[in-house]
Image (cartoon, rainbow, N blue to C red; front, side, top):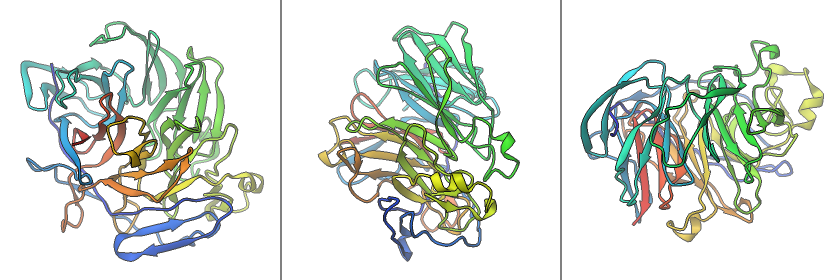
Length: 434
């Protein structure tokens, strides 16, 4: 059984940034390419807020995103329903979370392989794909679990399959290799549902020894404008035990942390964070950062280190002072969501242990930024070079506001290829090295 058809979306401009640290200060722009480097000590001043919204036109037949020379891009699964996140199971099965607000008919089609069966399924579902021979064309593609409430993060620990819905973390009994969830689950943690724009997403990752689960929860507002009493347990990464007990705040002040992964060299937890809107084209930079236990990253009182937000001026000087600057800026309003370290062997050596970032793309900016998958090289557990474009072509050239698709989740398959969830394009793209 395999899956069905939707539409496409995307935007892009190139907004890349250099390494940042609280002790350095450098800022500059390169007009035509929107190249921006920003450090916490010398950020641009707040400016006029401008918007530019994209128009999704869909991917023409035969057209794909563009990767660097030597790489091949193909459609791993198409005609889906807003696929946002990808999880690769220990046995190599690929799970995809679809999350929208209305149900659609799901047909049994993957990469051109079709069977006769159709099924009516809610788009708030999880799909399973299996590509046993690693040819980029799944032999199996079907609904694994449905009837969910805006699912996003997924995780397998032993005989348990976890799903992070917007309103809670659910645990289901699981047996390796099963193709459909037939047993009821239970909610082990209740979470605050919804959030500002698309801050309804809840991602999850386990510690390496599987003794802890980390849950990312985005803010319910842009900058706390509805009152901080509505932000309890939000803008945090929470730590819990696998049974849902023992909850504590692992790190706070992270406006909308989404992608998370463990650095293969330093063994530290890293995350990609969407920063705030309405302070101008170049503020505030989204970022990727190592996450320090007990640290405060500023939201909503400060940003990118102890830089006070003018809309919260004078409110919490103690928290402003203790705000930690993130490791690396990745561009203002890029909506950097996906995040994974590349630990496989299939790509050239320069990509080893580096980070791929799915940048969904801007709206609160006069010109598009993001709308691509970016790459940052790492060495000894730290960024070792500037961000560079890896997967582009989501914006229609000369189309003003037209886009083909918008990348979100990124994951490394067992064969070493990179999988990219294009929610607006309703496609999972596969990038392999020839």
